[in-house]
Length: 313
Image (cartoon, rainbow, N blue to C red):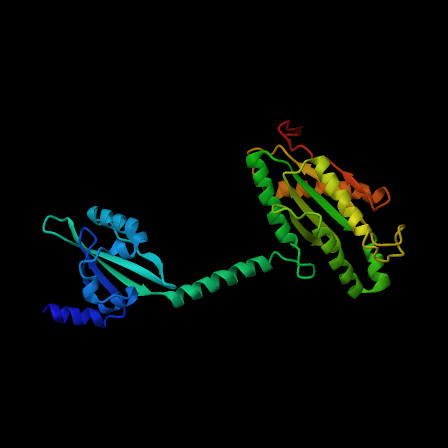
């Protein structure tokens, strides 16, 4: 009878072994022996954790669950470049205590690779939805996500967040004079120049729309933000892209700066983000009014509730 059962389990399309309470092998089929590169006879009586040390906590948990009559969840394990799903089931003594645990291992390497490719494709798709395809920077949606993330960090850690709104001066006139192809080339050159101004890991840079760009600087106060903005303005001027319609004779940018602080425990919603953008836009408008090719700062306005300013902001 035992030989019949053994032949039956050798014919199933998965690896199988049965372990006693001390985790020693009391039965193993040919597929399990093939996976571990030992014979069935060599595996008989073997402590399974001597072959798979990492599985000890898993077995301990499954035996504990079996003792309490709880379900035994599956577990994934990587072995010699292959991925396996382990399924567990228990047999019980007459007194209701677990006697043995059956472990079935199914090779899911192909399925795991498909899942991994799907996850990567999904991640690339999500990233592509947040990228401006002309400049390679973040697009408006990506920038809003970055602003929200940094403001939440500000709310949690009480660290300042700087926002720079950058606008190419007289860009419509540039397009009218040189054409939209040249306009796109100009945008790409400006994007590259701006990209050199915020290169820290937590900084975010993007094209907000048209000829307008935004830099989000984490943990940056007003003096530091103004230095970055001035460096950015100067680097774009140094590109010396011909533009007769500006007073400088080449492409320039105007930059509005604001710094957000004091949002402790505040909910970061679309209204808060809009206030941040509005503050930097106000500074940008002032820069344009004062002759362009310059940098101006506006403080982040306190939130008003019931007609009164909230001193916490």
